[in-house]
Image 1: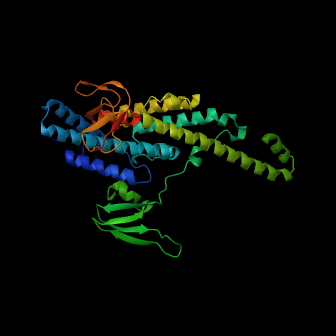
Image 2 (image 1 turned 45 degrees about the vertical axis):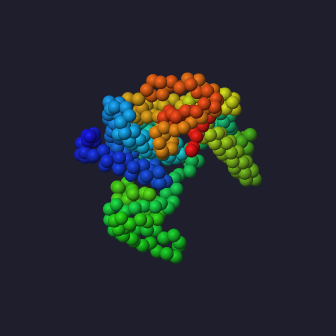
Image 3 (image 1 turned 180 degrees about the horizontal axis):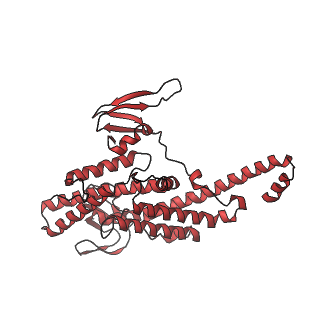
Length: 214
Length: 154
């Protein structure tokens, strides 16, 4: 059956919804930094899964369709779990930077953390800071008792190279030179083409959905 | 100590400045090493939650300090709160479904006595050492990771 989507502007078919989930999942897997949170997709997928499980419970046992639907549920659940796990790993890894970015976010800018992720990140930060303070820092000389995790924890490497496929044609993308002798140049990205390019150059295109990381 | 040499430097003994800076660098390096060591241990303990589940084997707990156990318990709780908030009424257990599903049921062999194990439709299976079973994959994941069951690949 069709799912309602839950958002006011768009009604997605289940196939489109799963496609969006897979796109978000792949982007998150291959991007070096934490991407925008997609609460609408997650909410809809969970609803869809509940719907499918309820259908399963009602249907006859031993029906071939039951196995196939069950398999589909498992598949979708795997993608959703993998997506959320990927985000948690990045949140934990880049903790002070993620929290800083969220705190200094301007009004109207999309959030990179869902409220639940934000709560988790703050708890993890407090937990770790308390631990380090009690086990080591408070025993150190007075001027060494504070440590800035923001300075010590490495930032995500935005200069790494990523593979992408172009979904919407883009013109005049400015590419920075590798070596000092080269000058910066612009390229056009044709729809359907695939590229290996520095993440920093195309980061806004990932956010807007113009390209898909692969 | 640090503060006394700093006050001597303030009183004009410039020859001590280099000594102070050198000493400060050493202290900073030591601080960094200590924190790196402790932080690395925390990362391994964090990985334990995802590997073993919420109850750690005694042999491992024995190697953890009291503060590390407390960190682990708080992390566990934080993670549980997050997972519960995600997937509808029951939440979504993110420590399951680590690998893409290949089939619904898998052949497993029991590596040690575990006792009774309940599967979805209410039936129970007795897991005795060396017994083999054909069970739903998602139910076995945790037990396979804990070393109770072994996935038999044909």
